[in-house]
Length: 381
Image (cartoon, rainbow, N blue to C red; front, side, top):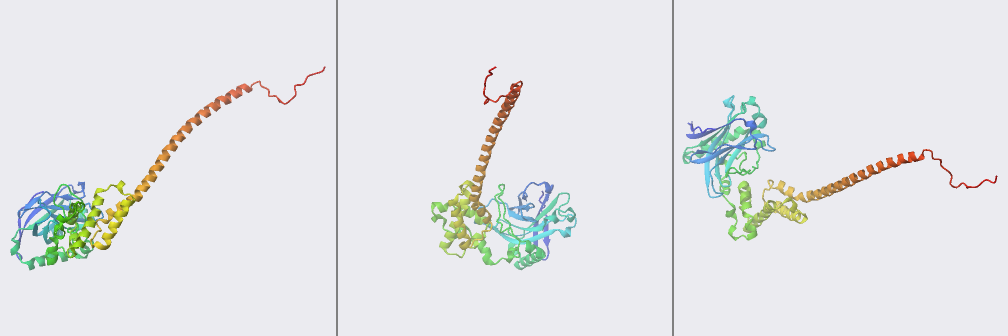
């Protein structure tokens, strides 16, 4: 892993980049679902590159640029123009480059996209993974951003988007990331998505502003009761990972926002604090009622949460099945003990039978059986 501080220039746009090169060796032996580079500094900011080669239910190789500074969840933003490149080691013209302008903030800490299909990436003949080594580059603009003409950035982003083709648009999808305890800079699955509006310059002004909203901008957190206050950390975490929660409620009334987020908080709190054994009929009915209300009326996009709710609701049936299985296990053990005891008694009875049979044979030797009903009688002469 090395930081090459070379300056790339584009005459027609006068945009300069600083480049970080990440060389990953023994790639196929990396026993992890995601890899990330060491932090590197460009424009006075810390960044990381993250790779998702082993994600479940995903058939493509993905790259992300993420903010690596230790920053609070709210109150900061960083407007950046950059390019990510998957280097083709056999033919440089086939290197895959994605470029975009993005505005990072507390709820939008990274941007990423899929680059090639996994089958293509792992085929060494294609040039992306050669001798089990791949090379990734991050090019971050170091020019004065205020001097870069907006229309030039628009042209660059639009051209980049056009190169993605129909396949990119078909495969574009939100990817939920798993918790990474080694870094404080995480990203939402909705931000780490490639779509026709990937370039920040293609966002509307309203969309950019709405991405800056936080939970405390929508709710008066200080006025919440003790029970509702316990939901706040869970809600803030969910909003960081899923900014659409904030966006979907920005135009709602005060009381509707309070109901929606409180109901979501109840579901999150129940899932976070309950154990499988706690999901009895009452708990399942309560969760089911809360979930139905959220899905029907809240306006939240909750597909990321649904699998966990359904799993929790299935715990009652699983507990009942577990109890049935455990009872049958106990019955099997009891019957096995009983059969073992009966087998012992049977063996003892068979041994006793054999001894008695032999004694009977010996006793019958020279023995003549008589009819005991015959009269004894006597002789007169």
